[in-house]
Every structure is written in structure tokens, then in C-alpha cells.
Image (cartoon, rainbow, N blue to C red; front, top):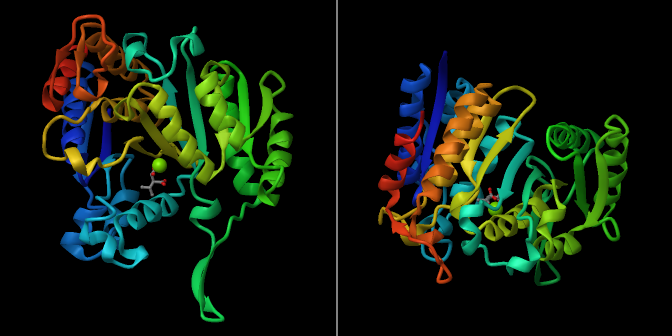
Length: 365
Ligand code: IPM
Ligand code: MG
């Protein structure tokens, strides 16, 4: 089978971690006889430097012509990078928001689980996670505060800024359906997260999610307020299966969920539309502080490539082989620096970005 993969390496550690995912895909293509053709797509700071825009029309056109996109990360240090002296619509993040909107990527899946091998890297007390945890955040990605009208203006000599949070029932329904579809294949439990004690958009969210739930009688639905969810994630993450939430809440809660997994460097993500197309990227950022040092953890990007195989290409077996290779390498004690904690008891073999990629590629069988 032949697949067209758009590759957005982006900024910071992006190129380093994407190269390792490509290394693993190359191995996969040999072992499983798949044919990937890669097309580089510029986005983020590097695109600003080369074209003056965080995402050009041409890049959007190229992206739309692919079967899926594998992405590293974009953006730089928001206090020191010259990119952040530009108006907001010219900054790196504007490219990411535009591609999400242009490709209609309304559902962002962010799995967070505790690998038994990484228990010691988890910052939670072991007594809070007796059974570990394995959850997936389904975050609405093309609506809400991120895409609402906003403005900053002067009223009576004082600056006033405004952002608006809007959701239509259709936007809520389609992402809720994704969450329930996913839950059906997992532990059949959706926790819908909102702020319905304050926000109208959340009250509509709750109503529509309840309507969708009627079509899934075997899936249990709970509602949880976002502030409580932030607390429950560190108190008892094992209670969650699928967390369904709107854009901004999902942004915040998914960073929290990733941290309790031990490291931001472990978590993959998929952004999906109504078709098989998807954009796959690590949940973590561009980490400009460690960029170019060759120490970044490539596992999240490698696992994102596995998600791409699973969701866009229906290659479940191949995706399993990547995930198993990652587990195997961790079991053998190999760790990038972010995965090494003071409490580590077993033997730890510290490796750099490229070594981690080699080890995983070697174990694809
Ligand atoms: C993420 C990131 C982005 C977001 C930023 C870079 C715009 O934090 O993917 O979670 O807020 O969606
Ligand atoms: Mg985020």
C-alpha cells in the first residue's frame, strides 16, 4: 500500500523528533511492505523566517493533498523569540490554528496512560494510582474561545480585551459522537467536562452530549465540572476512560494528563476530521530550551506515527508493532533524560534522541 504523508517538522525540537519517527516508519515500510512518500510542509516559525507567513496558502494546498500529516512542533520562546514581536495572526501558533481550521480537524485525541515501566517517573503518589491509568482526552479543536471573535479596544481611555466562546449544537454533536465511538471500543465510559454551573456554552454542551449518549446505551456518561476534573486527574486518574471536553478546557487538562504519565515526551495525539485524514503530533511543545541538543524524547512523535497508521491507514498490526517496540525499549531500561527520575530503582541506560529512535526501529518486527 502507498500512502502520502505530509511532514511538518516545525520549530525547536520538532525536526529532531520527527526524524526519529521517520526512521521508525522507514523500518515499518520494509518489514510490512508499505510505501510512504513524504512531502515537507512549512509551518510555524520556520515558515515565518522563509516566507513571512506562519502557513502559506500553498502549504495549505499541499497539506490537503496528503493522506495524513505527521508533525513535530511549532513555536519558540514567547518572551525572547522575535516571532512574538509580530502581530498575533503572523505568529507561529496562527499557522497551527489555521491548518486545524482549514482541514476541519475538529476532534483532538490525546491518550494518556501510565506505562508500568515508567511508574517511577509519575509525579503522583503510588497510592493514588494503584491500578495505573489509561485514558484518552477527546478535545474539541476548531471552536470555542480559540476561534471566537476577539478584540482589544480603548473604552473611556482604558484598554479592554474581549474573547468570545461560542459553540453550536452541530459542533458539539460531532465531537461527542467521536468520543462515544471511541468509548465503545474501550471501557465504555465517557466523562464530559464542562463549566455548566456558569457558562451557557457548557449548558448547551451538556444537553447535546446527553442527546448523543442516548444512541450509545452501553456507554456510561458522567458530567464533571472542569475545576473538579483538574483535581480528579491528580487524585484518581484511574477513574477516567474517555474525557470529552471543549477546546480550551482540553488544552489545559491535556497538559495535566500528560504530566501524570511521567513526561510530556511520551504522549501522542491525533487531530481528525470526518474522513480518514488526520494530523498527528506529540502533545508536548517545541521545547526551545533543549532544541538542537539531541536529548529530546522522540517517543511521543513515534507513537503519533503509530496513531497515524491506526486511524488514517487502518494498519492496526503495524501500529501495534511500533507500540510494542516502545514498550520493549522501556522494559530494557533505556531512557531519555526526561524519563529519569531521582526515585529510579532499576538499571537505567541513558540514551539520546537518535539512539532512542534506533532502538525502537530495531525492535519493529
Ligand atoms: C496544543 C498547543 C496549542 C493549543 C498552541 C501551540 C496553540 O498548546 O496543541 O495543545 O493551544 O492548542
Ligand atoms: Mg496545549
